Amino acid sequence: MAKRRFGLDNKESWWEDPLPDAADRGPGGPRWPIMSVVFLLPFLLPVTRSLLAEPAVTPGLVAAGVLVYAYSACYAFFPYFFRRERRVKLAFGITMNALGLASLAVAAGSGFVLLYGTAVVVFLVPAAWSVIIDLATVALGAVILLAQGRFLDGYGDLITVFSITLAMFFMANLVRAVRRLERANEEIATLAVANERERLARDLHDLLGHSLTTITVKAGLARRVLESAGDIPRAVEEIREVESLTRSALSDVRATVSANREVSLSVELVGARAALRAAEIDADLPHAVDNVRPEFQNPFGYVLREAVTNVLRHSGAKRVRVRLGGNWLEIEDDGTATGVVAGNGLRGLTERLAAVGGTLRTSARPGGGLLVRAEIPQPEPRAAGPAVRAEPAGGLA
Image 1 (cartoon, rainbow, N blue to C red):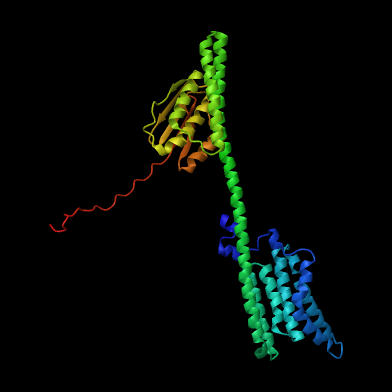
Image 2: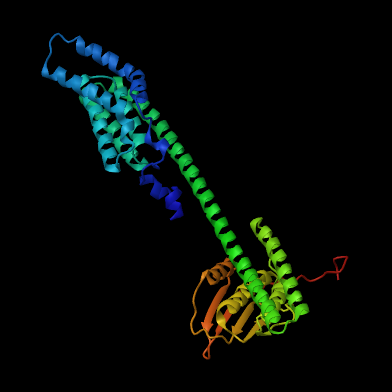
């Protein structure tokens, strides 16, 4: 799809219309009709002089004049057909070249007259159609000159028409390629902005969701301590931890906005232990992450953070167990959930793991609760090189 959109597939772009941006719509207003008169003068002046030199006005003379000026009018107003559908542009291009051939036959002018029609077709219709129409026009022009016995005198003009049209063909396709690249660059810039927005939204969701949930749990714990036991020292300690969490969350937000934030699995384990303890949930967590491959610890840190946040928010669990392996992570709770609800957090985790080739599977446990498993394939071991046998220093045994 991207190749077809940007015109990078040569077979597709060969038959496609020029890109419908402002530059492909041709010059607007009265500028081109006025400028076209300058280009038409070398054709119109001698033909008009020869028509006026005829002693009598005949139907053939009138028909010749109509053909010549209709052909000229097509050249003067062809930019207004850039906005039309392909079939309309094709019909216009074929009609204009037919008028040019008729003018060559009736007015007995130079074969150079065909250049106006062939040049218009090059810029107006897809490249493949321009080749077909222009080659047919030049070939029919040669047939007309042969039929009138003027081929030896006029074949040089046909060669000139062919050469100039070929140069214009390559120039038109170069212009279209540049415009396709400009459109591709605009699309790439738009996608980059969209991807950055998605990254920022995902990071802020993961960060603030966990931090605010933990802050809410700890603030609630401090309130309950004050209301039930009046244990002011413990309440003060919980409030201090809330203050520390808010400072940490603010620092993380700044790092996330600047795209400099890295998640540590060991730090997330410490935070998960504190958050679950504050929520009075029994936590069975590993004490170290040495058995996890270093390159997997960052994505697993995000998985642990989001899974613990979901436990605190929705599960109603009393116990959470976390297990770690070299390339996998499991979080299991005994909450009341009986099904999996895919929210923004799980979608974000799936995208994170997919970026490193991993997968996220979430399933409901038979007795209630959820099991979240993240796994990243182990990198394939490098093939051992051929064994090299050491030789004595002298090279001889």
